[in-house]
Length: 262
Length: 307
Ligand SMILES: Cc1cc2nc3c(=O)[nH]c(=O)nc-3n(C[C@H](O)[C@H](O)[C@H](O)COP(=O)(O)OP(=O)(O)OC[C@H]3O[C@@H](n4cnc5c(N)ncnc54)[C@H](O)[C@@H]3O)c2cc1C
Ligand SMILES: Cc1cc2nc3c(=O)[nH]c(=O)nc-3n(C[C@H](O)[C@H](O)[C@H](O)COP(=O)(O)O)c2cc1C
Ligand code: FES
Image 1: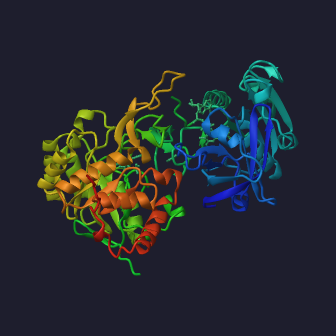
Image 2: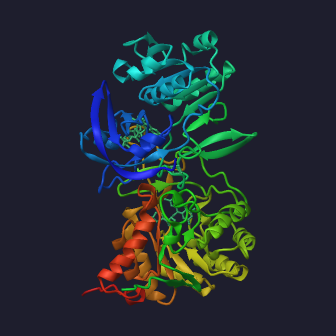
């Protein structure tokens, strides 16, 4: 669908662990949103911080007409959003970007999520499962407080492996540690990833070693989110030559093997 | 009643003075999801060069107080692809187009202009003489009156449409550069391009842009833009100026017209308000009506300075 710009009321604001979740009423966005797409949200109306911040869509409730984001209140914008309450209004553009490609026939897939990145994969897991697929997931974070857990993910996945850097939840280690074993066991068609860039880079390498294609949702600075400023480019290799593609409109989901990591 | 917003830009006739700033609107395709392009005076397209350019590595942007820094390095598909793609797309929709051309040498500008000759819907060409992100900053034409005159004369001779020179505020005397451009045949001026800035992350010690420095844009630079337009308009009252730098609302547009601008371009505001151009174009008609202004000629350059 074409993205829209609108003022949307907050339906619920909640916190779990280190993260916040905001659900807003935006029926046309809920109807059109695909897993992997994002919303671009104004974070200081009338203030000096003008640029919107991008957030992956963590959930779209088509019947209820709402969309949700999950975020880590690490800076100005995320803290402002973290202070929103029910009935507050936020200024949103979306849904933006190309989501994950889920059009192939149903099969077995592996999801690899890091930190709040897992939220976007929960939306994807529900979609893949609804299409008749079998979904396995590896979810990781620095510590238990930053582990994204959600019943939709639990219900949609046939198995979930949990890892944390410090061992406060699941197995101590990185998301890439259980990957080779799970790829061998489940023979996924595709590895879908969302999380911090270093994690995505490692995920792409392990998937490529195992000969499995990967689809990764990247994060780059985005000034506009709508394809006109060219600040958000990701270096990608296509037919032997280097291209600078826009993360916002050509992504944010890219073929992991094509990304020319810095 | 019946406010006439139509303007003439060095021979090019536009339905209203609100246009887009190069590099901040693509060629309109993406933005047509948010605005009716026919509500604008023209679309000023992103700068193109004779050959495709990859541009610089990320990070290319950073937010700053009331603005942002960018360093794109003129990424573009090359003038030929631009003419066959975006220009045709705009012409098919009857949207007047102003092409922006750039390069490292006088020959680069001439090659671009020759490649655009006769293009349908092309109403003017803007020479980007002031992009601060090319590898060799010493090469920025707009820093030197002689080099500005040299490239402008060659471009004017090669072009079949009006030529506008886009200047940099990062000079000691912008009037001297403006006079060099118009003396060499420029039909008008575009004021201003970004001003060079820098931002550093205090936690990582890293510059926020991969190039270290980059162009500052947004409301933070509006007073610089208004000053440049005012100085140049005072010295060259008959030269049409496309004013830009921090335009976010209709009052900003009126401010630039009072300083002497004929048209007003919206840049960075598109990023945070994708509807900004159309909103300002429509609000300008309402503003004129509300203030009894029948034509913008009545207020252009009419700033009052007391004392
Ligand atoms: C496509 C896309 C999807 C995204 N989805 C989400 C999402 O679902 N949830 C979410 O929380 N964020 C997401 N982000 C990142 C989100 O936009 C950033 O968290 C946000 O830009 C930070 O904004 P801020 O205003 O809070 O921080 P700022 O005030 O802009 O930055 C504060 C400080 O934090 C640093 N910083 C910025 N981002 C990060 C980071 N990710 N980790 C550590 N330090 C950082 C900055 O360098 C700065 O020093 C996404 C980004 C993209 C491009
Ligand atoms: C991301 C970005 C890209 C730009 N690219 C170009 C360009 O290709 N050519 C050009 O002449 N100016 C370019 N500019 C400058 C703008 O056209 C404009 O002169 C400047 O940003 C001031 O206006 P603003 O404050 O409204 O953005 C760019 C500005 C930005 C922010
Ligand atoms: S964020 Fe502007 S082009 Fe992608």
